[in-house]
Structure formats: C-alpha cells, structure tokens
Image (cartoon, rainbow, N blue to C red; front, side, top):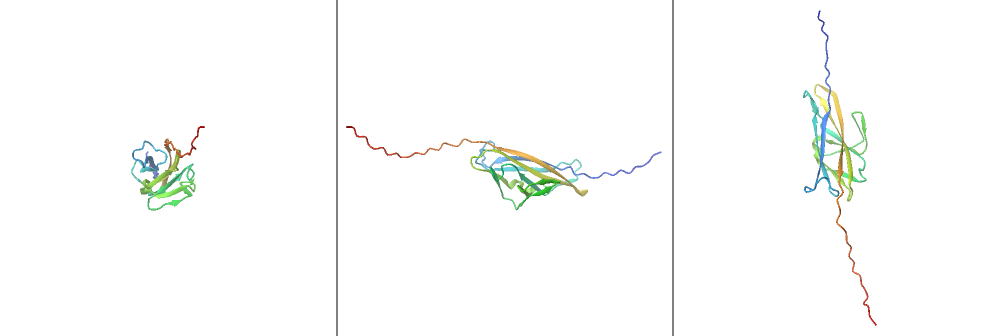
Length: 169
C-alpha cells in the first residue's frame, strides 16, 4: 500500500556574492600608493541556484580601524545615511553608511598625507527570495586594501649665509 505524504519546500534566500577591488586614482600607479585617493569597485550578485532571488537595492559600507584617524572618504552619489544600523541581526556601528547599490562605484577612500597602512571595510548586502519576500539573507564581506609607502623626495632648505671677510694682517 502506498501512502502519500505532503511535502512542503520553503524558499530560502542564499545571500549575495560580494566582490571588491580598489583602483588608484593615479592611473600610472602600481597598487595603492600613499598620498593618492582610490575608488572601490564592488559588485554584488545573486548566489542563487534556482534564479528566484533578487539582490537588494542598497548596501551598508562599514569603515574599520583607522577611519577619521588615518583615512576618510568622499561620496559623489545621490545620498547616504550614517549608521548605526542593525543588519541581519548584526550591529553595525556609527562609522558606516547606507547607500544604493548603484552608487557603490562613487565611494572614494582618501588616505591622509604620508600615511600608509591597511584600510579595512565591510560591505553588507542582501538578497530577497521572490517566492517569499519576507525571506531575506544578508552577507557581510570584509575587505582590506593596503596603501603602500612611497619615498618622498628630499626637502632641501638652502639659506644664504653671510660670512664676514677675513682680513689677514
């Protein structure tokens, strides 16, 4: 005898794939040299096997250690909102901004003059399951961009020095 057992599949959001690289604003530079700002090229895509998810329209960018002490940022997009935020149950601090996904390429990191070191950020993005819009999955992806030291040219201060004439007797 056969017995039918009802099965229910609940849609589950998988969260996005988040990739990011940094590009120096100095097109001739190798890497990310000090004294030059750089842009973050980020992409967020669905990580979904059945094609039933949509990537969220906005992201949160969290600035890590060194923000405002060693580096800052500029943003040329439409607008942003300062944190703190709660993102998928994770507390994101005040050094974070909420921007549209389309404006990610308008974020520029500006190291302070003569500073070199690591610039850590975390990009928080999400996907929504189309079959159940209440099913949302967040992904929190950390990135570290290294600003390298560049030798500064020497500074020479030349001063005119008056020397009294020497009289021989």
